Image 1 (cartoon, helix red, strand yellow):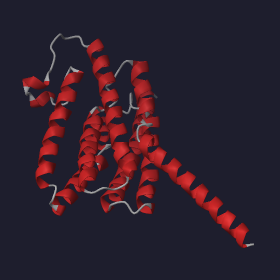
Image 2 (cartoon, one colour; image 1 turned 135 degrees about the vertical axis):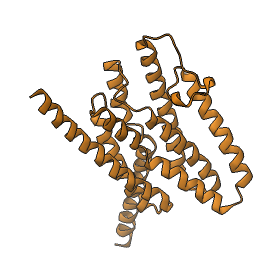
Image 3 (cartoon, one colour; image 1 turned 90 degrees about the vertical axis):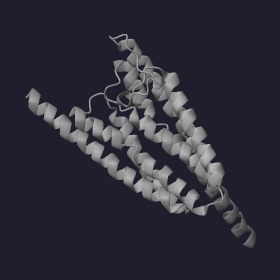
Length: 244
């Protein structure tokens, strides 16, 4: 009987390990999944107006800061890998947006980072400018982190900044929808996957006793996701009224 109990415990332990491994894989790659339907929507319509590229800016800053937060306070390796995957995903989205915008551009005037024109910040014509900005931000973050790495207060502040930016992920899209009075061009599937992913990862953070900043960030993201979904209902209703 003792042997049977031992086998059952081993089976349960093995099942839990498998589930934990699957959850970790979902955490690493799950964050990138919502951008697949948006990527496809931009390719299909050959138009980027419905998608706010500032979403990419927010996520790039958040994940670069999170990597330096990990250096100061080693939490789950899963979350570090997730940041790397998200950074690559955001670069893929920006590259597509630059390609489409340059294809559709009527004017020959291009806006470059070297122009130092704040009116066109994060609206540059060349993909290389986005890479250059992120490289500069990464170097600056690395220097500051190296100098203040021994300060526990700095490390915690870095973590708070990382999750604060991540919590604001959906805000640029929310504001763009409000400005356009429309959600046309925005993938609803993307927002639904945002919501599902945010619920999952917030639960993951709580169950794995991740730093408090992470589950607070997740909760704020869920609220913003819900607000965007309400916009979808509101603006689609307004469109029906205008057409009716």
